[in-house]
Image 1 (cartoon, rainbow, N blue to C red):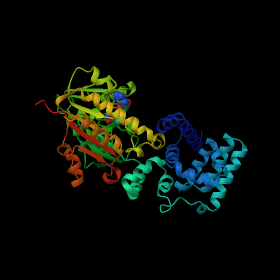
Image 2 (image 1 turned 90 degrees about the vertical axis):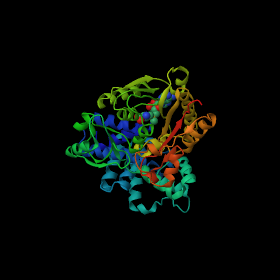
Image 3 (image 1 turned 180 degrees about the horizontal axis):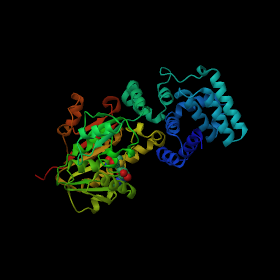
Image 4 (image 1 turned 45 degrees about the vertical axis):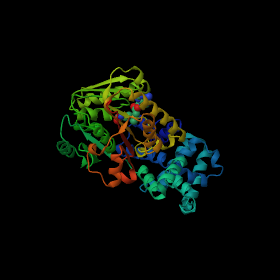
Length: 451
Ligand SMILES: C[S@@+](CC[C@H](N)C(=O)[O-])C[C@H]1O[C@@H](n2cnc3c(N)ncnc32)[C@H](O)[C@@H]1O
């Protein structure tokens, strides 16, 4: 199958509800393509999904009765407009010819004629199509030009203003950085860096987390001998802060209630020098399997996985834990750049449902937090209801809880008084447009000893 048809078939499956990354991997593994074509298909799929609203703007201006356009022809047009507007290196004639050929193969000649007409009409005078202007309608401008759902940009516009919302959307549309965490049980960051450079990677060190390295370019990770030897794992820089905030010591016992696939669990194990015990729970068996796989590859032995709904743990667990991590299920609006289809999958009503779940998890887990124990709550979202809102509600229903001053746990010097103030109050919201990293939230609570 040729590259464009493969991209089209993946997009069709995504429209039917599939996950873009899983489908893309699956199709790329099934069909033999050159590395250039693999890269081309990947960019076509991710770019077309990401810029969907902007591409639809062009289609809706150019197609009469665009509302009646069926999914297949619309996808072919989205693919063509993505190449025309976002991929300079693809010649215009090739875009049109290939789209028409594919339409003939997949549909009847009427569709091929429509696609031919729309693309040629556009190419005669591309400037004819005007994008919405900031000054006329800021919301429509954000929605179309930066291709985000309206409800999402409305929230951000109200909260952060136009300039920061634009920065946030630009961050979401840019390629995601590839961060890795040194497996300090097997090596040190400097040695790993040297080895990665010898393996053909371009590497920079994190100034925020002592184990973090940024891979600016790299061969496929699974091919690297350093990966096979379990010398590192992939984890974003902001996620690497979480385990530091809990700061477990060797020989302690830690409960990690939403642990799959184990990014933070294995980091906790590293900080504990693989001594002690981590009880790692999740509601999904396959997520527990991923924790075990990751632990095996990294040579970690202290993790005990347990299939457990965190909202029920307070009723059944007998033990009390001195350290608990709740890396809660959340809307993920801080990590949109990592999943091109995520923005279209989320719905505004998801937030209230997630808030209820987050509160239920915390309520339950607090029952097994030992007196004097510390709990870290984290999410990869920037929505205040799921972050400050959840913590404030829990503190209101448990007035005995104290916020932890997080500043001493931060592995880098805070950037300024605003960051210091948040940390001292025990809640830190990382924002892409301020912190240059994925959106992330970390809060710390302590259950005092009985007086
Ligand atoms: C943000 S992810 C955790 C990521 C993980 N801590 C890491 O660093 O790799 C949230 C996890 O919570 C799990 N989850 C969702 N609802 C849950 C529940 N009621 N009880 C326990 N786990 C739950 C999901 O399956 C998912 O694996």
